[in-house]
Length: 351
Ligand SMILES: [Zn+2]
Image (tube, rainbow, N blue to C red; front, side, top):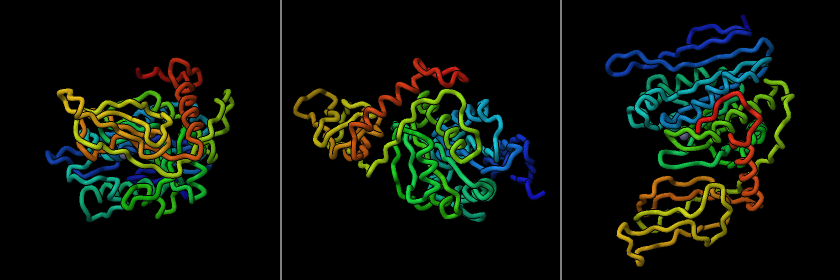
């Protein structure tokens, strides 16, 4: 049947929901391994959207976003197909690391190849079994280990379909970022599948706000592209996401113990003191200020107060109206705070 969707040899028909275990190369003790792919097909035709988590094996916020998403009552009446892959890099996930056992970064190995490295084979499998069957995609990430990201969308806005998804997701900030060769986003663009990346929170930790914003964002994109009917429940006042003009990292001027003095989402001006780096024994002369190299809004920070010279400490995004962005971030935090939010009572918040 033309309407049949086939993943790893399994047929999924309109109206069906199925978990397909896509076989992967075994672990070295010969334990069989697979990548579970959940497929939810509506009865009506519509877009085919993939939502992927843990392409970097330690970035687990997306795993929880997907768990909540597929349990959501809001998927009733789905048009088209939702394909969710909570853990793409199964090897990294088991080892609680970003990388594969061959030390490669999966997100630099797309589109991969059948005969290549382990990373290339996994990338190729994901492209052929998932991406090539889809019309749209959302890839869920967090900051790398010991870093935190303000919820943000990364997308190449020169593509109209990508821009539509990026804006619909409604994260407070969009970073118009170029495509890195080898990334999933790059390979999807080559394959003609519009994809956005959601970046929020940190590796190996849950963050309730990042999770909630993620679930809402995916549902909002699904409504925008016609997979779900417009919500009938009272909508939050839509926040207009702000698009960053560019972004830059502020790096440690010297090695030492680092005290951060600016929170995530803060509006900073060029030359502002963002923190101090000092020697551990408290010699005042050893203290060095960390100064903002440009004006903008803090969209990423380190979490570890032990720094080496040159390490990235703050990620600052430049905006035309940074004060309005900072206000918008504050409103976003309020709206999604589990203590004040009454919009989505489906899940008990992780505290
Ligand atoms: Zn990542």
